[in-house]
Length: 276
Image (cartoon, rainbow, N blue to C red):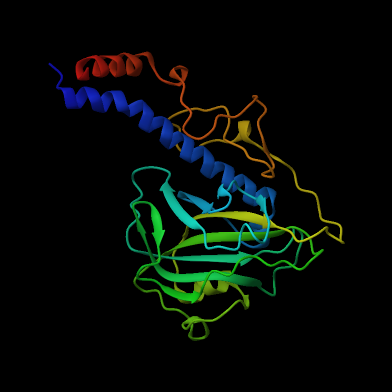
């Protein structure tokens, strides 16, 4: 006879599976957005995240990739949460988080980008990025694009920080917003791979220059990195440039019995009856 704990575990399995698949699709969407917005390769040569970075601004809520915010909305330090694509990734140890201004699409970034945030030694506690024991090199400084300069892309990146990490001499003490080569910093300090990243768009006034057009991200073409579940689309928000060819997208956490196997539905029912 199967014990109650096992039945409950089996019943919950499809829900865990759907959640994992949803995260994987959202990570795939982030990768697509980084290419669509030309963050890859203009800022980052490549981008292969292993987790989803969720950024929550108090007056806005959780942002979608590339969401257009005002300077006022993006002024306070956001709350950042990290969700692994799968359970094999353990979010232990130290990390470095940074936010840089990648300017408008088509900009020459070879001379560096303005650094608006750089914290070394952050921890991830219950999925949230914690600065409790971290070293703030550049405290969070909200976006401030020049009026009429167009929609700037502000990229938030979370790096692994191994024990061998050593901050360069010119960026080992607190300093304000300055020009910054984020790739050279990562290489010279010994940072590990990018765990997760996302970005917002901030514009002041109307652009006085022509901005190169970028193609939209079509969610139905995305493939999750985990082939353990399927979903027709990923959630979309205004200003994200993400569309679905399969009709309205499901919001995060929306589940349908059609997405589960008959066995999982039966097991879920049995578990509920036993518990009741």
